Image (tube, rainbow, N blue to C red; front, side):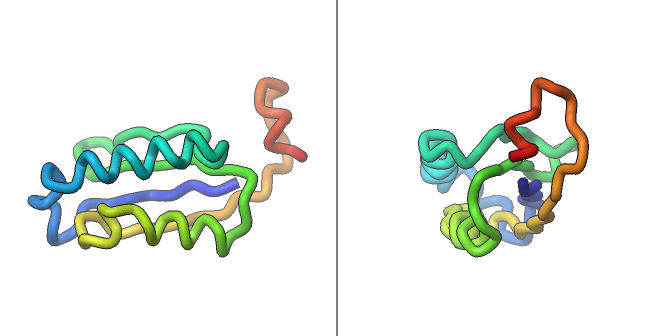
Length: 95
């Protein structure tokens, strides 16, 4: 499982120009069954993604394809988590 932090960077002002492409990237992550959740980092710092079911190399490649990353609107930080215990609603993460 991965947590990905997408923190605003120096080209933040370009975000509106690439928002459609970024949203398409997010949709593709859900359509592919990789993204579990996306949301905003508060206060107005960028976004975060929870991802599951792919390798480190695959998630790095996917993140590097995000138009916000490509355009320097955000910087990415990927953290891998090896779940050891979870609420029963999250048992699928333990496999």
